[in-house]
Image 1 (cartoon, rainbow over the protein chains, first blue to last red):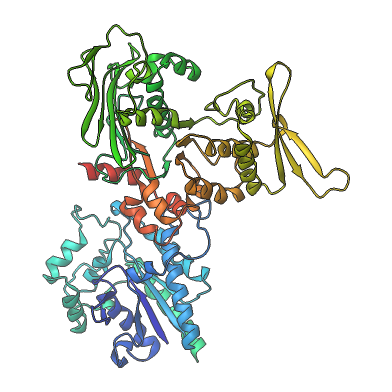
Image 2: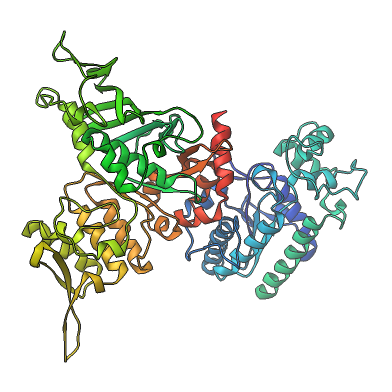
Length: 239
Length: 387
C-alpha cells in the first residue's frame, strides 16, 4: 500500500527539493507513525528511496494538473468557500486513482490544509467536509482530509512533551497572528526554531509525539479516525 | 481602443478609475464587470455613455431620454457641481488622453485638454480655446452657446489633428445598451440612425442597413438558432418599419414560419439586437446584464461571439455561467469586481488579481470562483492593498 500526500508547505507535509526528492515535513512523520500500528511497519523506515511508499504531490504540482471535471456551483447543498477545497481533493483523488490503477496497488491519499480560513476565520468544518466530498467525486474511496484546527502549530504544540495543558486545544481560537493565543508564536517559544528540519528532528527524537495529543483535540481525532478507517479499507483490498 | 477612464463626482463614482490607478495594465478588448447589486456597475456604463455624449453636445436631450435632471449627474456625496474626467485611448499606436471638467449647471465642459503621446493638441481654459498647431491663436469660447465639449461646436481641422478625430470617433463609436428591453425592441419604428439604449428602433435601424450587413446579421443569428432562415424587413404605410424572422421546421403542413418581432421570443430579440450592434459601425459596445433572457445553452456561443468579435466589449453580469465560459486568460485580464467602499464610493479591481480568486482559478472555472468567494472579502483585500 502507498500514500499520496499533499500539503501547503514545508512545515506540514514537506517539500520537493531541487533534486526532486520528497523532503518530509512533520505531518508526514505523524502520518507514518499513526499508520505504523495499522500497517505493521513504518513506511518511512522501509523505503529504499524517499517517495517509494510515501509519495508526494506539491501544492504547485496539484495546481498544474488543471481543473477537475464537473461544475461546482454553490447552492443549498454547498455553501461559499467549499468548491475550491473540493476541487483540490478531486485532483489529488484522481491522481491517486490513476496511480493505484496503473501500479495495481492501493493508495491512501491525504490532503493537508490548515483549518483557519481567510482573515483567520474558523473554516474547519467547511474545509473538512469539502475535502471529504472531493475524493469520491473522482471515484476514489481512500481519501483522508488532514485539517488541523486552527493550524498545524496547534497540533505540534499539543504533541510536545513539555506541553503541560493537554486540555487546551486552541480549537476555539482563530489562527490570527495578532491573537494573544497565536499558536505559531507559542510553538516558536517552545521549540525556538520551528523550521521543517528541526521539527522533524524533534519528532525523530520523541520530543514531539502525535500519540501525546489528547482526544480533546477534535480535529486531530477526526483525522486519526479517518486515516485508520481508510488505511484499513485500502489494506483489506490489498490482501 | 478605450484604455482607461477616470471620473470624479459622477453619481457614486468619486475619484474612480477603470482600471484602478494602481493597475498598470489597460482595459482589454473584452471586459466584464461583476459585483453586488448597487455596487455601481450600471453607473459605470452610464458614465461611459455620458462621456461619449459630451463631444456630441445635446446634453439636455440626452438627459431627457434617460429621464434625468442635470443635478442627477453629480454625486450626492458632495455639493460640487463639476465632474472631472479623463479618457485614455489608443488609436493607430498613439496614446491619446482627453481630460476636462464638466459643469452640471452650465451643462458644458469648462476646461478641456487633448494630449497625444504626451504632446498637447488643444486646451480650453479660462474661456479660451488654444489649438497647439496654431500657436498664438486663442479663441474666446465664453460667448459660444453649446453643451458638452467644445468638440460639439468648434470645427477643428481633423486632418491636422488626428487626436481630435480619435475623440470624435470614440464618441460616435461607443454604444451603451444598458436597458435592453424586449418590449422596446419589438415595437415598430419609423426611422433610426441607431438603436436606442433599450433596443428601441431596432426595426427601423435594421431596415436601413445595406444588403450585405443584413445578410451578415441573419447569418450570425442562424448560427445561434439553426432554424432561422431569413430576416425580413419592410416599410408600411406612414413609414413604420417591421421586422420578421423566418424559421423553417420539419412540419408537413407548414414548414415555413414567419414571425414578426412583436411575437418573437425575448431571448431571440435580445440576441438579434446584440448581433445587430456587433455588426454596426460602433467600436465599443456596453451591455448591462448580458445574460438576461439568454438560454443557458446559448451563453457559451454568445460569450465566444463577444470575446472574439472585432469590437471592444464591456459587459456587466451577475451570472457565474457567463464567467465560466470565459477562458482563464480573458477572465484574468478582463473581469473587474466593482464594489462600494465604506464611504459609499464605487471602486473596482481586477477580480482574479486578488489572492483568494487567483489561486482558485487554477482548479475552478471563473464563474465557480465568483460564487465560491465572498466578494466583500475580496473588496476588503483590494482596499487594504491601497492603504
